[in-house]
Image 1 (cartoon, one colour):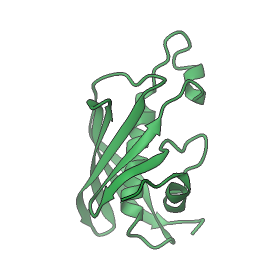
Image 2: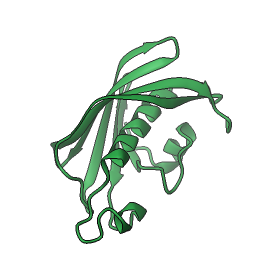
Image 3: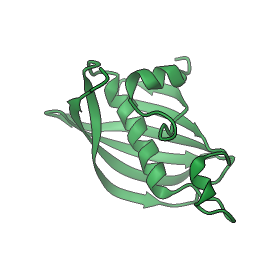
Length: 145
């Protein structure tokens, strides 16, 4: 499978700058996806988190996981539907994510039933796990679809 860039991602999920937190789909299968986020010092959140020692905020790592889950789920949905984040379970942060890191999100579908999706998401940097969570998405109407 060839990598798929930002146009592909924007065709699936509605997030845009400054809250589009994934850059490229590296690999995908029927029930999983692997996504890249290049973390640069130019990210707007580093201005305040933290100026002397920049660290990517944990809530934004979770948002990146949710966006990877959204890409996974949206591939099989009509454009009139969208997956909304409705839950985060078992979130753990293991290491800080710093400017210059390449953050890899792997999302795997665990359960899909009646418009609800549970996705196991793992974030790694250089093969080391930095965060993980179970992301819950619910289908809703896509206003832009």
